[in-house]
Amino acid sequence: MSAIIELEGVSRTYVVGDAVVHALDDVSLGIEERSFTAIMGPSGSGKSTLMSLIGCLDVPTSGTIRIDGEETGGMNEEELAFLRNRKIGFVFQHFSLLPKLNALDNAALPLLYAGVPVRERRERAEEMLCRVGLKDRLRHRPSELSGGQKQRVAIARALVNNPAILLADEPTGALDSSTGHEVMELFHALHEEGHTIVFVTHDRSLALECGRIIPIKDGRIGYDAS
Image (cartoon, rainbow, N blue to C red; front, side):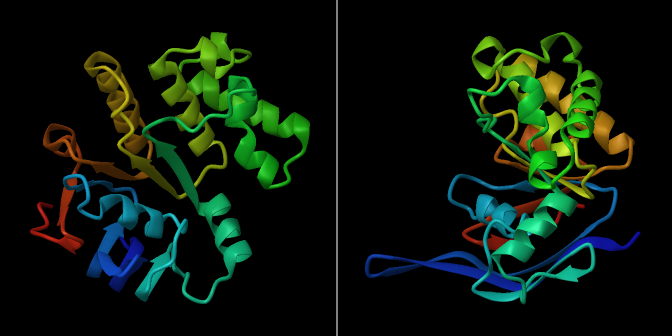
Protein backbone atom coordinates (compact mmCIF):
# COMPACT_ATOMS: atom_id res chain seq x y z
CA MET A 1 0.00 0.00 0.00
CA SER A 2 1.16 3.55 -0.70
CA ALA A 3 1.60 6.31 1.85
CA ILE A 4 -1.45 8.57 2.15
CA ILE A 5 0.40 10.91 4.54
CA GLU A 6 4.02 11.92 3.86
CA LEU A 7 6.24 14.29 5.84
CA GLU A 8 9.79 15.12 4.81
CA GLY A 9 12.05 17.17 7.09
CA VAL A 10 9.11 18.93 8.75
CA SER A 11 9.81 21.43 11.53
CA ARG A 12 7.51 23.82 13.37
CA THR A 13 8.82 26.61 15.57
CA TYR A 14 6.95 29.25 17.54
CA VAL A 15 8.20 32.52 19.01
CA VAL A 16 6.99 32.97 22.59
CA GLY A 17 8.26 36.27 23.95
CA ASP A 18 12.03 36.18 23.56
CA ALA A 19 12.14 32.38 23.27
CA VAL A 20 11.95 30.16 20.18
CA VAL A 21 10.06 26.92 20.83
CA HIS A 22 10.84 23.96 18.56
CA ALA A 23 7.53 22.09 18.68
CA LEU A 24 8.64 19.75 15.87
CA ASP A 25 12.20 19.20 14.73
CA ASP A 26 13.01 17.64 11.33
CA VAL A 27 10.26 15.02 11.30
CA SER A 28 10.03 12.60 8.38
CA LEU A 29 7.47 9.80 8.23
CA GLY A 30 4.95 8.06 6.01
CA ILE A 31 1.57 6.63 6.99
CA GLU A 32 0.03 4.05 4.72
CA GLU A 33 -3.49 4.03 3.40
CA ARG A 34 -5.97 1.92 5.45
CA SER A 35 -3.57 1.77 8.41
CA PHE A 36 -4.34 2.36 12.10
CA THR A 37 -1.45 4.39 13.51
CA ALA A 38 -0.90 5.75 17.01
CA ILE A 39 1.23 8.84 17.57
CA MET A 40 2.23 8.48 21.21
CA GLY A 41 4.00 10.88 23.54
CA PRO A 42 3.70 12.79 26.82
CA SER A 43 2.19 16.22 27.18
CA GLY A 44 4.32 18.78 25.35
CA SER A 45 6.00 16.17 23.13
CA GLY A 46 4.74 17.70 19.89
CA LYS A 47 2.09 15.11 19.05
CA SER A 48 -0.81 17.60 18.82
CA THR A 49 1.36 19.93 16.72
CA LEU A 50 2.07 17.01 14.42
CA MET A 51 -1.65 16.25 14.14
CA SER A 52 -2.42 19.90 13.36
CA LEU A 53 0.12 19.85 10.54
CA ILE A 54 -1.17 16.55 9.13
CA GLY A 55 -4.69 17.97 9.37
CA CYS A 56 -3.74 21.19 7.56
CA LEU A 57 -4.83 23.24 10.57
CA ASP A 58 -1.30 24.67 10.71
CA VAL A 59 1.61 25.01 8.30
CA PRO A 60 5.22 23.93 8.88
CA THR A 61 8.08 26.34 9.34
CA SER A 62 10.08 24.13 6.97
CA GLY A 63 9.75 20.80 5.22
CA THR A 64 7.22 19.15 2.92
CA ILE A 65 3.80 17.60 3.65
CA ARG A 66 1.76 15.59 1.15
CA ILE A 67 -1.80 14.46 1.87
CA ASP A 68 -3.12 11.78 -0.48
CA GLY A 69 -0.56 12.90 -3.06
CA GLU A 70 -1.27 16.64 -2.76
CA GLU A 71 1.59 18.83 -1.54
CA THR A 72 0.27 21.44 0.90
CA GLY A 73 3.22 23.84 0.86
CA GLY A 74 1.95 26.14 -1.87
CA MET A 75 -1.66 26.23 -0.71
CA ASN A 76 -3.35 29.31 0.70
CA GLU A 77 -5.85 29.17 3.60
CA GLU A 78 -8.84 28.65 1.31
CA GLU A 79 -7.13 25.79 -0.52
CA LEU A 80 -6.09 24.17 2.76
CA ALA A 81 -9.67 24.44 4.05
CA PHE A 82 -10.93 22.80 0.84
CA LEU A 83 -8.41 19.96 1.24
CA ARG A 84 -9.43 19.44 4.88
CA ASN A 85 -13.09 19.32 3.96
CA ARG A 86 -12.53 16.72 1.21
CA LYS A 87 -9.86 14.51 2.72
CA ILE A 88 -9.79 14.73 6.51
CA GLY A 89 -12.17 14.06 9.39
CA PHE A 90 -11.35 15.27 12.92
CA VAL A 91 -12.27 13.86 16.33
CA PHE A 92 -11.15 15.91 19.36
CA GLN A 93 -10.85 15.12 23.07
CA HIS A 94 -13.52 17.61 24.12
CA PHE A 95 -15.90 16.87 21.23
CA SER A 96 -16.04 20.47 19.82
CA LEU A 97 -19.81 20.31 19.24
CA LEU A 98 -21.87 23.47 18.83
CA PRO A 99 -24.14 23.65 21.91
CA LYS A 100 -27.12 25.25 20.17
CA LEU A 101 -27.28 22.60 17.43
CA ASN A 102 -28.75 19.13 17.84
CA ALA A 103 -26.83 15.96 17.00
CA LEU A 104 -28.13 15.88 13.44
CA ASP A 105 -27.08 19.44 12.63
CA ASN A 106 -23.71 19.04 14.36
CA ALA A 107 -22.97 15.93 12.32
CA ALA A 108 -24.01 17.70 9.11
CA LEU A 109 -21.68 20.70 9.53
CA PRO A 110 -18.92 19.53 7.12
CA LEU A 111 -21.57 19.08 4.43
CA LEU A 112 -22.87 22.59 5.09
CA TYR A 113 -19.37 23.97 4.53
CA ALA A 114 -19.09 21.84 1.37
CA GLY A 115 -22.27 23.40 -0.03
CA VAL A 116 -24.34 20.19 0.02
CA PRO A 117 -28.12 20.86 -0.19
CA VAL A 118 -30.08 20.73 3.08
CA ARG A 119 -32.02 17.56 2.38
CA GLU A 120 -28.98 15.57 1.29
CA ARG A 121 -26.80 16.68 4.18
CA ARG A 122 -29.47 15.77 6.74
CA GLU A 123 -29.97 12.37 5.13
CA ARG A 124 -26.24 11.68 5.16
CA ALA A 125 -25.83 12.97 8.73
CA GLU A 126 -28.72 10.79 9.92
CA GLU A 127 -27.18 7.77 8.22
CA MET A 128 -23.88 8.36 10.01
CA LEU A 129 -25.51 8.93 13.40
CA CYS A 130 -27.45 5.69 13.01
CA ARG A 131 -24.22 3.96 12.07
CA VAL A 132 -22.55 5.03 15.34
CA GLY A 133 -25.56 3.96 17.40
CA LEU A 134 -27.42 7.26 17.89
CA LYS A 135 -30.62 6.63 15.96
CA ASP A 136 -32.69 7.73 18.97
CA ARG A 137 -30.62 10.86 19.71
CA LEU A 138 -30.87 12.78 16.43
CA ARG A 139 -32.71 15.77 17.89
CA HIS A 140 -30.83 15.95 21.18
CA ARG A 141 -28.46 18.85 21.87
CA PRO A 142 -25.02 18.23 23.39
CA SER A 143 -26.25 19.16 26.88
CA GLU A 144 -28.72 16.27 26.63
CA LEU A 145 -26.09 13.69 25.69
CA SER A 146 -23.57 11.68 27.71
CA GLY A 147 -19.85 12.00 27.07
CA GLY A 148 -19.78 8.84 24.99
CA GLN A 149 -22.77 9.98 22.95
CA LYS A 150 -21.11 13.36 22.31
CA GLN A 151 -18.00 11.61 21.04
CA ARG A 152 -20.13 9.42 18.76
CA VAL A 153 -21.68 12.58 17.30
CA ALA A 154 -18.16 13.91 16.75
CA ILE A 155 -17.16 10.68 15.00
CA ALA A 156 -20.28 10.82 12.80
CA ARG A 157 -19.39 14.42 11.90
CA ALA A 158 -15.83 13.35 11.05
CA LEU A 159 -17.11 10.60 8.74
CA VAL A 160 -20.01 12.36 7.05
CA ASN A 161 -17.91 13.63 4.12
CA ASN A 162 -16.36 10.18 3.61
CA PRO A 163 -12.81 11.47 4.21
CA ALA A 164 -9.70 9.54 3.24
CA ILE A 165 -8.15 10.15 6.68
CA LEU A 166 -9.61 10.19 10.20
CA LEU A 167 -7.52 12.11 12.78
CA ALA A 168 -8.35 11.50 16.43
CA ASP A 169 -6.64 13.65 19.10
CA GLU A 170 -6.99 11.98 22.54
CA PRO A 171 -10.57 10.97 21.66
CA THR A 172 -11.08 8.98 24.88
CA GLY A 173 -9.35 11.50 27.17
CA ALA A 174 -12.57 13.06 28.47
CA LEU A 175 -14.37 9.73 28.93
CA ASP A 176 -14.53 7.15 31.72
CA SER A 177 -12.74 3.87 31.04
CA SER A 178 -15.87 1.91 30.09
CA THR A 179 -17.10 4.54 27.64
CA GLY A 180 -13.57 4.97 26.31
CA HIS A 181 -13.45 1.25 25.57
CA GLU A 182 -16.71 1.50 23.61
CA VAL A 183 -15.31 4.39 21.54
CA MET A 184 -12.12 2.42 20.84
CA GLU A 185 -14.24 -0.50 19.62
CA LEU A 186 -15.92 1.90 17.21
CA PHE A 187 -12.53 3.05 15.88
CA HIS A 188 -11.50 -0.58 15.36
CA ALA A 189 -14.70 -1.22 13.42
CA LEU A 190 -14.04 1.83 11.24
CA HIS A 191 -10.50 0.64 10.57
CA GLU A 192 -11.78 -2.79 9.55
CA GLU A 193 -14.06 -1.02 7.06
CA GLY A 194 -10.97 0.48 5.40
CA HIS A 195 -10.55 3.90 7.02
CA THR A 196 -7.05 5.34 7.55
CA ILE A 197 -6.89 6.34 11.22
CA VAL A 198 -4.24 8.41 12.98
CA PHE A 199 -4.77 8.20 16.73
CA VAL A 200 -2.94 10.70 18.96
CA THR A 201 -2.53 9.57 22.57
CA HIS A 202 -0.31 9.66 25.65
CA ASP A 203 -1.74 6.30 26.81
CA ARG A 204 0.46 3.34 25.89
CA SER A 205 -2.33 0.80 26.48
CA LEU A 206 -4.45 2.54 23.83
CA ALA A 207 -1.51 2.90 21.46
CA LEU A 208 -0.88 -0.85 21.70
CA GLU A 209 -4.35 -1.45 20.25
CA CYS A 210 -3.24 0.19 17.00
CA GLY A 211 -1.30 -1.53 14.25
CA ARG A 212 1.68 0.82 14.48
CA ILE A 213 3.09 3.16 17.13
CA ILE A 214 5.08 6.29 16.25
CA PRO A 215 6.59 7.64 19.48
CA ILE A 216 7.40 11.33 19.75
CA LYS A 217 9.34 13.22 22.40
CA ASP A 218 10.64 16.79 22.46
CA GLY A 219 9.45 17.30 18.89
CA ARG A 220 11.39 14.36 17.46
CA ILE A 221 10.26 10.96 16.27
CA GLY A 222 11.74 8.09 18.27
CA TYR A 223 11.87 4.39 17.57
CA ASP A 224 8.96 3.43 15.30
CA ALA A 225 7.30 0.40 16.86
CA SER A 226 5.58 -0.76 13.69
